[in-house]
Image 1 (cartoon, one colour):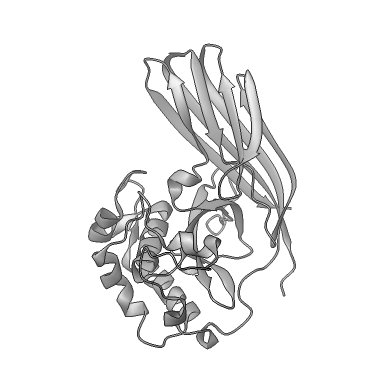
Image 2 (image 1 turned 180 degrees about the vertical axis):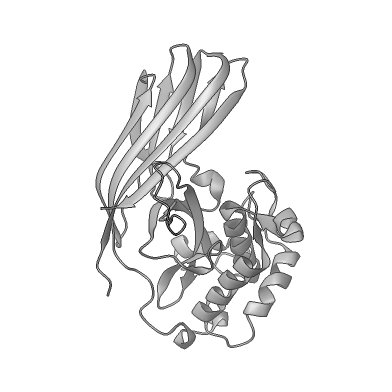
Length: 295
């Protein structure tokens, strides 16, 4: 098994407002999640201006969250999260073609089964941003012929999405529907994760949305630029007898040592890095910089 890797991750969000904001209340998913394969060695968040209220907690899915309020007038808000995280390999150590047939994990979409494990069953259900669609079933079918091993089918779907879709940050927004992404074949990591989850849930399989970071590499001959990385999204699918397996449809691979997990939920809205409300007659300009480096 590969050695664990320790990363330092700095995630800086800066909001600049056209007029003074008198009150802002935010919820942050910026502390990496503790998991069997991931250990948070250190974590710190700085907010400027300093919050008048701040407390940490855990959401419904078990993710760490921080709530804070800034009640002094301000025209700029900066949130800087720094974490030291150790990641161990958690990819399946068996041949993906030797797993159980995908039909063994099948259930009718949206059906709750008596005595089923809630953590698995709840991720078969549609959610506002990830609907169950006939178009999603049609697209997924090519990867799920009768009797195919579930891990192999999941990996095939992952690779097909990478091959069939173009990464285009200008093609979508955070609210673009899955049906539109499927029709236009363009989007970003959030869109591709939502699409893959829609495909799996439409078939009756359990899949959840994962928010976090991926290690990126500069072009040959170039140095790494601080802040040039980005937050990322991928998918975890449940395989009976194996557990949850992470797949990255944006890059067409299993998510393992190069990934740091912030949290998971049904969709992007459950684990958005930062969202909230402000009291102001103003527009905002948002910039995000992420730096992830192995130590």
